[in-house]
Amino acid sequence: MAMNPARVMVAKSKALAAPSSATILLRSSWNVVSITTPAAVGGVNALLSQRRRASSSLLGHQLPLSGQRNNNNQQHQLLYNYQHKRYFARDTKRLKFKRGIPKNQGDHLDKYSFEDVGKKQQRVDKNILVIGSSGILGKTLVSHFGHNCDWNVIGADVLDPKQAADEKGLRDYIQLPKEGSMADLTGELYRGVSLHLQGGESNENKLDAIVCASGGWAGDVDVAEMMENHLAKANSSELEDIDMEEEYARESAEVCERMMRVNYYPIVAGSQVGRRFMKPGGLFCMIGASAALSPTPGMLGYGSAKSAAHHYLQSWGPTSFEENGTTAVGILPLMIDTPSNREMLGGDDADGGDDRYSKMVKPIHIANEIGEWVKQPHLRPHTGSLVKVIAKNRRDGSGGAAFHLVR
Image (cartoon, rainbow, N blue to C red):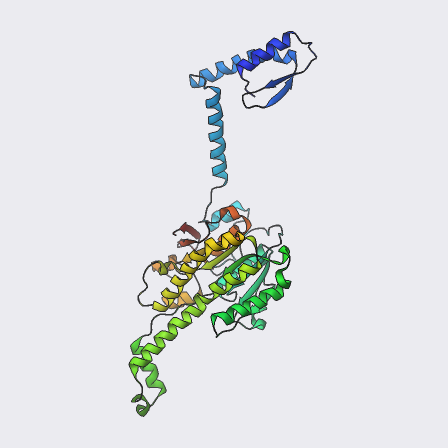
């Protein structure tokens, strides 16, 4: 430890009058007290002179002690920043190498894998509610939270409980109504959560996180397709009584209503349930859409519902944080890599020539990021924020995803 020369001189003068076996307190420039003897103090000046000569030969000058402290602080800060640097886009091969997995293993993972790679973590009791647990993204979240993280996962969806019972990592399940109002959906979800959490009276029986993964897509009504459907179902006499303009208006309204039911209603229902059953400092995360950040011609119902969900989360986020410390965040992918989305694009891109496939986000990358936010709250964005997720896929199937704050 480097000592302040002025204090060393004072200590040296005291050492001349003290017995060799006595102890003397020395205080350094960092206010750190050390215990020494007069014999040890005698060599302090020689040690300081030796260090000055060695430092001068290397640097050409001796930094003042204040400069040394600043230099040490800077080095410590650089080390801290390096240790806490986030890598959102992780290469599959590098991930296998870093976790010590042999090269010939890990081939069981495919693009729809519901499991992460690596050793199972030490169990920490957490309660997670996944709304929309029966879709591809929902199953991935349930498997990652319930199997890999070993958390207690409650799923909620419109699927029959017998079909949902086979989902890996699922502890409990709540069946939601397929039709009905937003109030009906909220009431059913509230009663189901209360039942599985035993009323949520104690903090242990409350939720650490709510993830709303439900959603769906539909484009605007096509007039030609609508007329073909009516021609196939009705005879010529019945067609004379049909007003095509009225039918088009009615079916367009039905699409908008259905998009609100699957993309907006669950957000409101989940947030209201969270007000009662969320632990202080919990996480509420919804899946939005980066396409809804701008106008969406050709899919008015879908864009309107997703935009409404974004607005709701941005408005409710600050309120939820003030009430209970809950952080509300929206994740906005361009398109999630699911079989239905690949079918909509027209195949599996076997030759790798379609750039749209490289922009599809793997469900496991979203699950990994949300899991990190649950485990490490200091990594979360601020409440009410929207985070855009961008795929970083390669032709060989490896890659990852990058998460960027947009609002």
